[in-house]
Structure formats: structure tokens, C-alpha cells
Image (tube, rainbow, N blue to C red; front, side, top):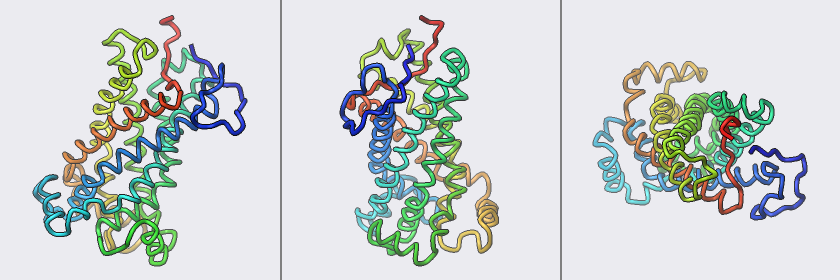
Length: 326
């Protein structure tokens, strides 16, 4: 059954300590969820950095990089050496740790607060809406922190001579463009990340429920390994759906951070100019296959690692519960 925490917070409690009895969803639970989210996003995005480098190059220069993902990797390695595939790795790993912290931690927080406010029965009936709302709120907060790091990463990938590492890139961008330069891509990041995250959590939740339904078991009746397996399977489905939905905005985001893209003027004018130049079909399709492979793998990995880390931290992941099934 659903047990809410009292408002008690354990002072100075270690992250590894089990949550106190009767306080299943207390502040320590949210901290563990945030830490697990930071780890799963940092590890998966960091591991896929070479794919992201090629994807960004394809979006920025489709004429030159026109031989697909593997061909693109070969071209980058042949021209610039293997290390070029790790361009922006520091910004990627750090940026996505921060983003994962707020995204996964935030989704757990908003999801549980909604259940507390609505009650179990209403929450069960409206779980897709709760997933969508929790994901949108958490992602908006996470993107405020991610946007500057993503701007430095894209600038570094599009211009390998730009900086030596994250701190150097920050300093140079601040000097050249001011604070506004870090948030030039904020609207496209929101347009890409918010629908992406809403689709990711809602589809993953629905897919996981369908898998549990097919197996005829609830999460509490499965082993931790079985639950991780369900997270991996539902994560692949969620990742492909989320990649297709967010791809046009992802292409715009890659282009807007390129110097001079879309001409001068306000952000919306520049975005519209880029969209016109690129064309709607190209916005939706260029680089889509590598992105589906990347996001499908990434999302499965994220949900799998999230569950594994939560188990290791002694936290039992929140699942919606149908009170009528008792």
C-alpha cells in the first residue's frame, strides 16, 4: 500500500542509509532518486558522446557527413583523430548529471506529491496525466541548469578549435556572448526536452504496466533483477517514441548554436529562418536513425541504471498502485 512520509527529515542522514521505517517517501527518498538520476544520465550520455558528436556534425553539415553514423565516425577519426569523438565529454557528463538529478528526482517528487493530493484511486485513473505533468515540471527546472553546458558542448563540437575543456569554454563564451549566449538555445532546449521527457516517462510507465500485466505480476512480486529487465524493455520503447517526437527541435538546437545561424535578430526570427532554410522534412528526418538508436539505447540504460542504483541505495522505487486490486 502507499505510505507517505511524515514531514520528518533525518538530520545529516547519509545517502547510503536506509530510509527510516514508516517514512518510505521522505526527503532521503527524493535525494536518492536525484542521485540515481544524476548517475544514470551522466553515465549513459557520457558513453554515447561519440554518437552525439557525429549526430551534431550531420545536423550542422549534412553535405560533408552524408555516409551515415559509422561513415561519419570514420570521417571524423580520419580527419581529426579518435579523440575528436570525445569532444564535449566533460560538458556532457557534468551537464547531464545536473540535469538527471533534477529530472529523475523531480519526476519522483511531483509524481508522489500528486498521488498524495489526489489519493490512490484518482491517481491510478489519471496516472498518464500525472506522468506528463511531473515530467514537464521536472524537465523545465532541469533545463535551466543544462542549457549553458549544452551551449558550450555544441560550440565545442561545431568548432573543435574553440576551447580546451569545459571551464575554458565557459570563460570564452561568457567573454564573447555574455550570459545571454548560454541561453540562446533555451527555447529550442525546452521545445526538445519537455515533449521528449513527457513522452519518455509516460510511454515508459505505460509500457512497464503493460509488461507487468502480461506477466501477471506486480513490481513488488518481482525480483529486483526482473524489475530492472522490465525497465530496460520499456525504456527502449519509450526512447524511440521520445526521439521521434523531439527530433525537429533537436536539429534546430544544433543549428542555433552555430555562429551566424539564422541571421541576426530575435531568437524566434532566427529559429524561423533556420526552419525555412532547412525545410520541415529535413528537420524531421536528417539524423533521425542514429538518434533513434542513440535515444533507445540511452533511455533503456537510464531506467535500468536508475533502478539498479535505487536498489543499491536501499530505496524501493515508487510505482502507481491500483487500490481495487487488493
